Image 1 (spheres, rainbow, N blue to C red):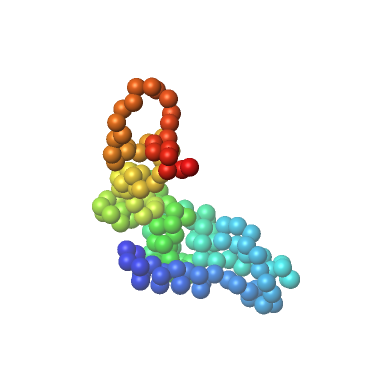
Image 2: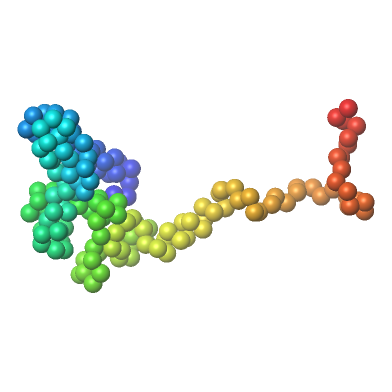
Length: 158
């Protein structure tokens, strides 16, 4: 999911797979948590893709994405998207990991490894205003020895 087109396609598919109405009575539903939704009218519980994956992992323990996909019916791309979002994580000591989008090293969840995030954060620090860092003057005024604060060219303001 490195380019914008793939990301937009994933988001569209991910949103379309979320329940919006009760499958029994077509009533409105509300999000309870952990991928579960409850109907306001009949109380029926719906489960989205995250709920299916979570239930599978809770029952069976960790497994490769392809096996989870086969058992739950959730596409592998959606499961990988959940890993990229940090909603799921690969257990320590696994044989397979996802790759950092910048350098390609193995990571358990997310999009970037800690080193790439650190580099990215350091490069962004210069962009934002930091009140502790003063601005150097472009042209230094001649030094006056009185030590008092004063206005330059005060006559202009009268």
